[in-house]
Length: 133
Image 1: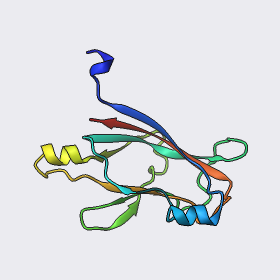
Image 2 (image 1 turned 120 degrees about the vertical axis):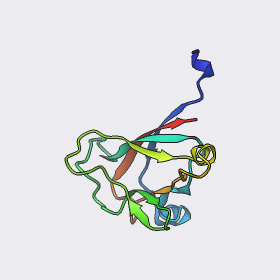
Image 3 (image 1 turned 180 degrees about the vertical axis):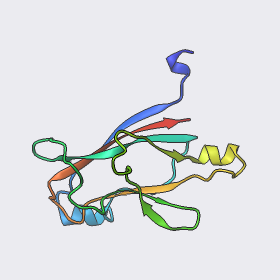
Image 4 (image 1 turned 90 degrees about the vertical axis):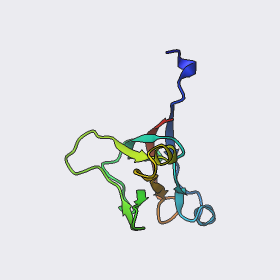
């Protein structure tokens, strides 16, 4: 198979600290607003947090409510975190294309990334997403 025949995409996503309360308000506190992916599956490397100034990786996010959230079939919203002690892992999300080709057996997952509770918190978040079309 030739690379140009492949329709998978990979994206390194970096969410930067808000510069002001107005910037945070304009995004409604979301680094990524609620949405569903359009492909079959999305593989995600769990987000890491880094000091905005030094770029050093932080042990964890200083604000525990920041990060990836999903809405389940019943409408409940849950924060998604790697299990404690799991080491390296991947998350997978069902996209709209898989919902269609499965005849609704699988449901696309609405998800978002909540940002920090205020501006100038001193950290940013990075993640890697692979979209399988």
